Amino acid sequence: FGEEHDNLLSQLSEQAKPVEKKLNSEILNWKIFQDPTKKYDVVNIYKAGALTAFCVSDIVNGRTFITYLAIQPEADTRNVLFIIMNYLFHKNNSFWIFTWEPQNTEWRSQFSNVGFLKNPFPKGPLSYKIPVILRFEPVMLNDINMHEIENYDITPIFQD
Image (cartoon, rainbow, N blue to C red; front, side, top):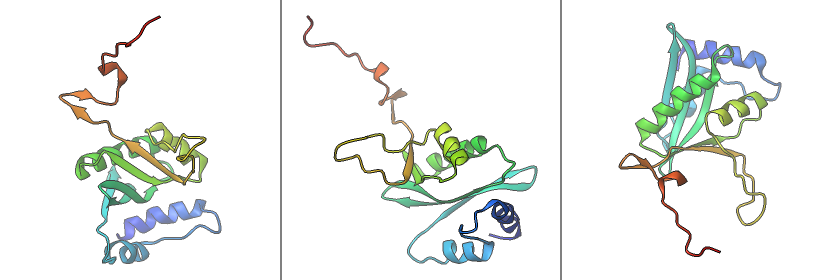
C-alpha cells in the first residue's frame, strides 16, 4: 500500500461518520502484510492510470472472504464489484465469496445487484441473521449449471 491508497482512503474518510475507523497505507501494511497468521490477497483496480478501488481478501475454509474493500466515490461501484468478483472466483478457484453486510444502504444495494445474498430464512434453526452476505458461483458439470431446475427432467411419481 502506498500514496495512491492514501489518496483513495482520504476521499472515503471525507464521507465517513465520526465513529468510523480511519485507515491509511501504514495501518493497512501493518494489518495486512505483517499478520503472521494469514495470507491476504490485494487486488488494485485502475482506470486511466489512477487507483479506482482496492480489495483485500482471505481464504477461510476454502471460501473467499472480503476483508476490506475501498471504491472511489465517483466510480461505477457495480462494475468495479463485478471485476473484483470475477477475479476472486477465478484466482482462488472458490465457489463462495462472503463479507460483512454493508451498513450503507447504497452499498448494500450494489452488493445485492451483483448477486450477494443474506440469510433468507425467517424461522427455524437457520433463522439467525449474522451480518454476513455471500455470493455463490454456480457449479458447472459438463457445461450444465447443477443449480438450475430447468436442467433436470422432473416427472411426478403420482398424478391425480
